[in-house]
Image (cartoon, rainbow over all chains, first blue to last red; front, side, top):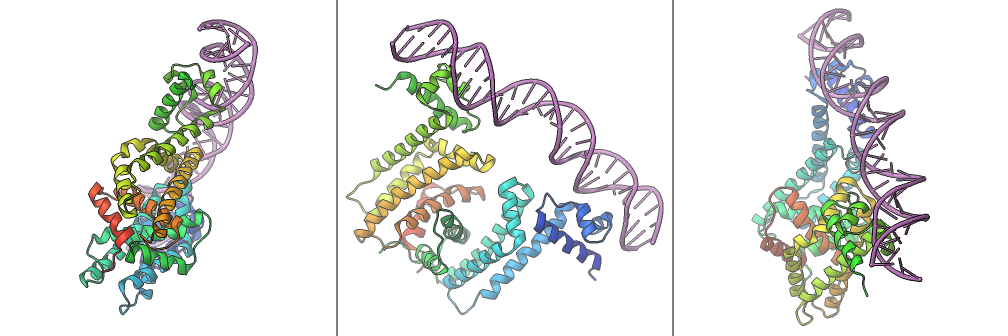
Length: 190
Length: 190
DNA sequence: AAAATGACCATTTTGTTCATTTAGTCATTT
DNA sequence: AAATGACTAAATGAACAAAATGGTCATTTT
């Protein structure tokens, strides 16, 4: 049976991490927010890092679920990848904890934040890679290193959505989809 | 007639910027390295920033020249891109200044380093874009936004060399060339 | 006279100290 | 047995002092 206290702690910590980031969240604050003695936190979690990791695992889980809602086994790999990536990135900007971590890593270089982002990247890449591997086995796409393929796809998405926007004009959803298709699937060759 | 002293200063400053980055390079150090009084530097350059900018302009110029040595107007875009890519890969150690700036911007957020990278990015992108545009007009490759195409190529290059290496195993020259070909020209589709 | 110089100055950066804050513990309370 | 918060050792950062740095300019060298 999951303790009510544990749930309170996780809820309070999630709020605090989301609002203030990793570093600026103190265990005293979490205890107060959860209406719990500080020591109680340590009966459930070994330390601050483990508390954070549990919350992060949940976030990644939620991302996966969001992707899976959107994937249609009847559709082609490239349609599914496109939909899933778009969903994940939309989720990422929508989800305030991810946004906060992104900002904290860039502005303060908090190692725990960098770690968290790395884990999110890993989760996304390994998920896409497994999908890509299946598509390769079904001979839907060329056989190549699925991890690199997944990584390239993720980076291309970020390039098109985030980096290109930083250079000025942002691209529409449709443009992004077209460009993704062009560079990942069909290529520039005539 | 270009002064010997000016040349000495530029040489010393280039070495120092390359070795220590922008911030950690001091004008005293440059003066000493160039065997020149500090004041002499200021007879040639208004300030540290202008000294740096002149060096940066030279670097960009050299990159362009290196690319042009290798590019053959008679060859296809595809072939030229490949040759340019190999040229860049072979002379990667020469890019040490760029590497250092990349690192400095990431680790310390030095504004001058960020500025410099942006300028290099602009120069590279507009150069590739003009080449790509010509190739499109010759109907060698599909018609699409040449700036985006150039940007995607640059980012893919960085993804394969820098970002993937950061994830563990680095790729060989041949692997990089193959992957570049796969994602830019032929695509994953069967 | 023109070019080069380094001592000098204002400002910024770095090093140090120390009071405060924080993560984590544990004896006590519930 | 579970929960707690006062307690401690370690981390942090504010405040101050010292050192370093970019840039100037009166003097020296050519």
